[in-house]
Image 1 (cartoon, helix red, strand yellow):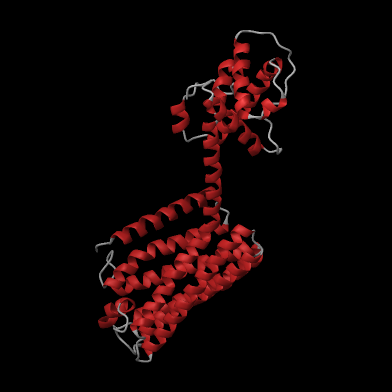
Image 2 (cartoon, one colour; image 1 turned 90 degrees about the horizontal axis):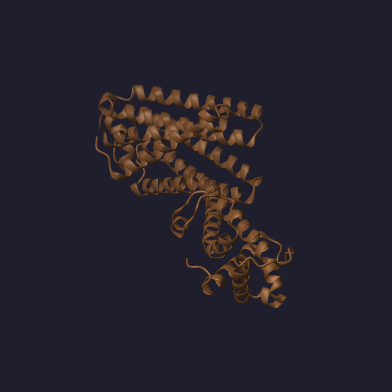
Length: 387
């Protein structure tokens, strides 16, 4: 059996996600919610190749097309059950969630039993057409009870599970924090779309049993709703994490940019006061530009080192008679700093009283760093350091 590029990408992504979730389960084996997500991913991932084989009417791993369809649906039903369990154990007390899970397990068992019996009694000459009927809208056998019951049982449980998951998602979203609430609302719309597609599938199964296959546009619309719902559901679940990662990335980029922009000021101060360096490893502009690890630690360290250096050089600035207006303007302060650094290098003796330099108007770290960056740019323009 050959696979398309999409099939391969789907397989790599789904089994990769399953492996990651199993690793999380191994780290916290007592977390029922992680087990539920692992069950969802396992059912979805393993069912996919069997579904492809069934739609193509071919033998896969020694299993005929109709049995592949049965395995696919059985795994999807288990995945849907796992999804419901995840939301139940997320929204309810453990004891109540266990009771609900047992009740839904009984419903799942009934659906699987009906689908199993129906699969067994499907006539041998209709097994391949019965397996491919979902991929051939308007075609295939009609009026066959065993085929209809098989698909009605499977699709009815999927409809029930996704509708229940949608209700639990909506309920859980009410008490969630804003970012998670937005994601859960998107997921709720996705589950509603999947449920609508499931209802259409059940209606189509009943129509086929009655002898009239649903028109192809109806089936195509149902498939569209199903795919749209899956996309919305995945986007909704991923939304909080993506937003968190995006916010963290913005902070990371800001710290990395500030660390680089502070280099001119840090360099001239570090040359005079190397004892203030919190790291004994020499740095270079190229290393600053290319190093991607420990950005936050290096950022905070550089801010502290710049402040420490300004405190040490401030008595020399005071000895030069710099007035507050000069110290408030970055360009003037850079010129005064040049003279103060030369005085320090010459070993001049000055009072030890420090004075405030380049203080921000607001009492915050970001405002302080902005003031230091302004001074660092002025130092670079004053050609006090080559960078």
